[in-house]
Length: 359
Image (tube, rainbow, N blue to C red):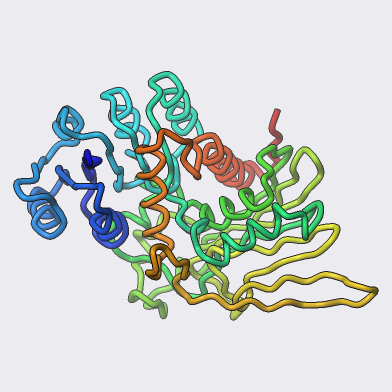
């Protein structure tokens, strides 16, 4: 069996914590190349996860020039997603790029255009679609149990969970804070479950409130207010062309106990669903209201060949399957582009104080 040969660009936490452990579990994959601006970090990743004799590079251009590579995984800061993904596709590689798709909607559009022109597969790392509760809810929606979904909430709220390492607080590198970092997961999940990708108008606000506090309590230690250049929370209302409305809430630091991350609430004409405590489905039968409570393991538990499969493992397995079988990835670039356009519209609405209308 010919193995799919993968190269990793960016060997930080998202690569070593998510992509590489899942890739190395697959019998039909071998990771043959590693690149990072820190050659030492790339070598450490190669030693732990790579095929014997795996190549190590300091520049991504060298890696994508390697003709032995079929697939590239882009695990770098947001501002380089488009540049690297486009170069890799132009070089004949299929690409999995970490979320968000790009720092700007214009860059995301370029990525879609290049994928179409080159015929290379492109997907974005929205792994929360692959959780057991998400997968089950998708089946519920597709079965019509909720009817027409006309109101939803995309939840990405932490009380105190500011990532104080790397470039998370750098607006130039990331393009924003919790909205583009974790809000993007909740928004992708909500749009995918609704199967609605036609926005009409967006009204958004973003705050720099708790980010100004000195020595603040935080899961990962206090942040430096002088370096906190992105919002600490953001909120939005999105109205779709069919009138369906989505409320978005995203925060790293907010004085609330109502915390939910990468979760959604759906309200339809026949029933509703939320991810407050496990998965709850509500509706009406025989003139009586009902609530169905479904519990899933915290990390997601599907069974594949008799083994528990995490959402990350399932995401990577199905991505590789799409390459081997020449099928469309589950997370398509066109869907991810709409997420990026909405994120940008929320930021623009906050800057201008005006609603942002889509054509």
